[in-house]
Image (cartoon, rainbow, N blue to C red; front, side):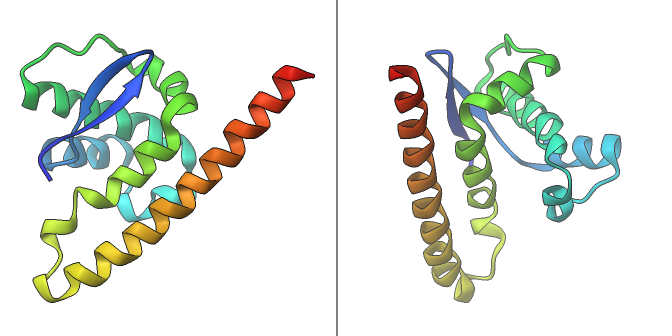
Length: 128
């Protein structure tokens, strides 16, 4: 997949996980992408490198800094996490892609339901 977009503060930001972003992430943090779930704080630099590569790909300036990533993840963590596997569909052997896409759809559906619950909970707290 070439590029995806995350909405943050009413703006669409391109993200791309490719050689640039993955090599920079692994070089600076010494962690393979498969092990990121062991430390959620690693999503911040991964998102930053994905945004930098997305901006380069789209030939647009990036108006965010690495320090902004924690706030951006507050707003779109689930969307970012769900997008990660989609970048790798093409690297999966063709005979396994259909099964991978089905599993990915299940995860995204589950994430969407979680997001709805979270948003509903937030709205309820504001009414009180």
